[in-house]
Length: 572
Image 1 (cartoon, rainbow, N blue to C red):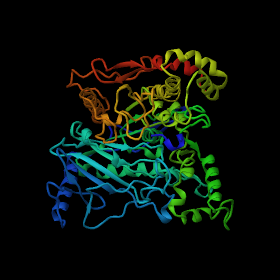
Image 2: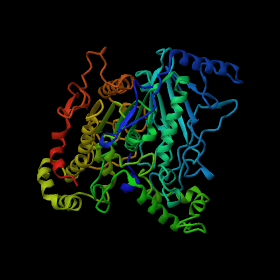
Image 3: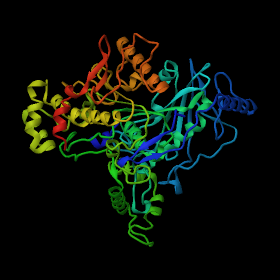
């Protein structure tokens, strides 16, 4: 999810990316693995496991990866393999370097529990950071029993957390695996100052967290068959910062050939906040930053940390060695992660700002699902209303002037207080529509001009509230940011369990997501009772509304419901 501390704070055919001016960059053809290759890989895994000391048992299965044997855990209908390294520890001299290959190991590595989360500041309050720099691990959840000869579809999940918090192991993927028949991989990637730092000495280094994600995708291509997956059928999906990451990979030339479909949940490339959206003093927010600006921020931060100019050539020379010598506690602080939590563009991984790349068609030609939640901004505002309340019309109008300047009166006419129960809910509607719903709709239009696109809106306003959110009287969270996650993942992180009707919706969403992973189309021809999900067309811009009950899953026109024609006329 976006930074809450800052709130307080092988596919068929040939892969390609279309570039502006009619130029087309060709990427190498990726061959679909044959049945023989899959059988050889599985045979190799079985043979290695049988020959290894401590060979697997039904309760503790063993799989041979490209780096060594791992012992997982069997469950009812699925198996998990956790804490598998996909890259070398990015520590010491490897801090702020692209991920390097993981080191092979001897014997059987225990994979029955997650590895550490990537180092991050505490979400609430003070204290030292938690986690470890040695965190580039992933987790595999695979169905047990026979699967298709070519292997099951693989879904690679990128967690949210504002590029500052989170870990892949939070997301328990057995529903997608057992009901949906997918092999699911959840990934850690470097966060905050360790993952998204820039400095003149680093020149045009890529965003390290995004480079980690690409390393994980290369691991999946090399190892998916060993877990029963099809390495030629990989879907990349994520939420919030994970959705933004998925969009970044969609426009990244260096991600060519690493995935075949993409699902973006509450994280389109065009997401943007006006100034003062969450609290009056916050500036406007865009999720990506130019490499030039990031280098300047890094040089300034180095000086504050006592690593100014060195004895080498040029400003800041020698500072990077000094910074690599600092303890992680001095780098992973709320103050620094509030600065270094956005991927930079203007480098080989992201040559162009992702929103611009999307608009001009410079992205990989793969099917896309993309959506947002009906009440996105209520989650973020829930953290700030105690300190920055909206009590009456005067507070509401002050927010409008602060965020929209000369357009404030027009926004108030479009969103009159009389149409909402409270000023806080009126402001949540304004900012949800401006920052989330209509930016996602613009991204849908850009995608649909070139690739099959399926849009959705998660609309269950009775969804369970996520743990950690404060109770704000008179401010229901509704279908807020991240509230769709318990419908896809089995999670203890909610204040209430799903009701029977919500469980039915969870099953429906699981079917849609995994069917899309199988084929690139969420509709299932063998389920005639399932509501049809129409493809998004620029002339028929329908999304699938996702809510419990009869009529809760049906095509829905996002634009009028979220005042998008108004916002198209008042784009900042």
